[in-house]
Length: 139
Image 1 (cartoon, helix red, strand yellow):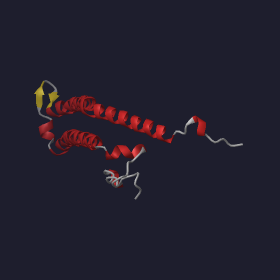
Image 2 (image 1 turned 90 degrees about the vertical axis):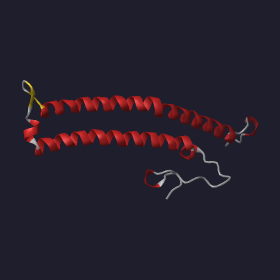
Image 3 (image 1 turned 120 degrees about the horizontal axis):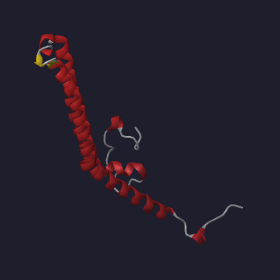
Image 4 (image 1 turned 135 degrees about the vertical axis):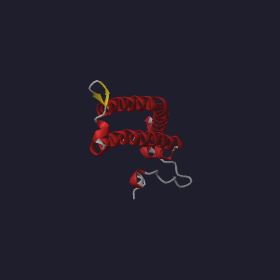
């Protein structure tokens, strides 16, 4: 497998001693990148589990417990209709929490990593730049 693309979306192996990764693969070796991946995955897994679990329970209750879902709460409002409307609230809260989580936990790490990557690229460009008096020109 290539050194540039870790297998199955996992972490890239640590670089050999004395080797300083350059370019996009350098960011994969940064400890903050690992914390970024963990923050993104843990929140995403929990949110998907709760959202899909709530929707799945609603569908299962509708299919296997219709008498429960048809019980009147207030006037024509049934338990099933109430749980169906709650699904909109759950999705709204999940979206709001996702935006908040990204803004508080993920975005600051991404901004730091981008700044570090830009700095690495600037250093790399300065190392590879040839002084003006030493340029060779083609015919």
